[in-house]
Image 1 (cartoon, rainbow, N blue to C red):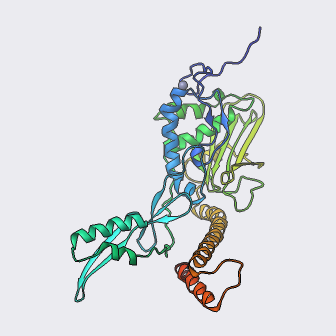
Image 2 (image 1 turned 120 degrees about the vertical axis):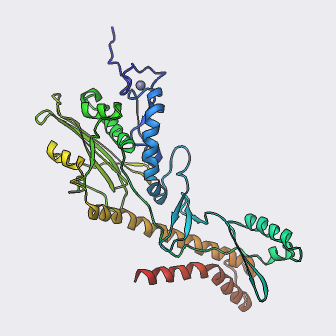
Image 3 (image 1 turned 90 degrees about the vertical axis):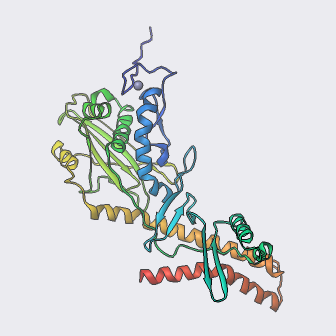
Length: 381
Ligand SMILES: [Zn+2]
C-alpha cells in the first residue's frame, strides 16, 4: 500500500486535493514573483484572505514595481499618479513613460483677444479639444488650427516624488505567508510555525514580523539589483524557526515563526532578480536571538538612514540605465524624424541644403530633451 502525507490548508485545515489546490506564488506575482508552491492554501482560503493580503502588499510596492518596470504573468503594474517636487502631477506608466494625468485647457482674454492653451496627452485628444473650441467660438477654423498644432514632447523637469510606504498587518500577513510557503518546501511543516499560523488565522493576534536594518543579513548581495529574497531556518537548540523576507532590496523583514521548534536543523533560501525574473544564488545569515527579533517587532531595529542607503543602492543604477535607454530612444526618434522630413536618405550623400535641414529637424526633436537634461543637471549641482 502506498501511503503519502496528506497536505492540509494552512488556514482552514481542510485536506487539499488536486481540485482545491491553489498553487500559490511563493513571492507574489504582482511584484515579479515566479515560483509556485502547491499543497499550501486551498483555493477558497486563497481567494478569501490571500488575495486581500497580497493586494495590500502589491499597492504598497506599486511605486517600486513601476519604477523597476516589473513584468508580471498577467497584466502590467497599474499606472500611478505622482507629484513632482514643484507640485505638478504626472502619471508614471510601467514602460517608464510619463503622462499628464488629464488634459489641460486654459483660456485667457487679453488685449489681442483670446489666448487658448491646450495640453493634450496625444494628438487625438488635442483634435477633440480643438473641435470643442471651434464649436464654442464660431469664428475659429478648427481644421486650420489643427494644421498648425504640433506634437511636442515635454519632459517632467522636476524629480518625481515617490510616496512610498510599507507596513500594516494585511501586507505583513502576505510577507509571513511567503515565509511559510518556503517552510512548506523543507523537511519542516507549516504546522511547526505556531506564531506565524496564529497570526495568519486570527485577526487580533499580535503581528509576528518586524523591520530590520541593523546590519545587512544578505552575505553575497549583488550590487545594484533590487533583489527579492526569502529565507527560513529552523534550529532545535534555540527552538526557533526564523524567517527573513526582503523585497526590492529595501523592505527588510525578520520573523520568529516558532519558538518551540524541536525538529531537525533546516535552512532554505529563495531569491530572484525581479527585473529579469532570474533566480539568484544568495546566502542569508539569519542567526538572531528571539530577543533581537522581538526588538525588531518593537521597531527598535528600524533605521531610516539605512533604508535610504539601501534605496540609493538600487535606485541609482536603475536611473542610470533608464537614462541611457531614454537617450537612445530620443536620438533614434530624432534621427528617423529628421531623415523622413529632410528629403535625404540615411547612408547616401546629402547636399548642403539637406544637411542644414537635417540639423534643424534634429534639433527641433532634441531640444526639449536637451533642455531637460541641462535643467536637471543644474538642479543636481
Ligand atoms: Zn483553506
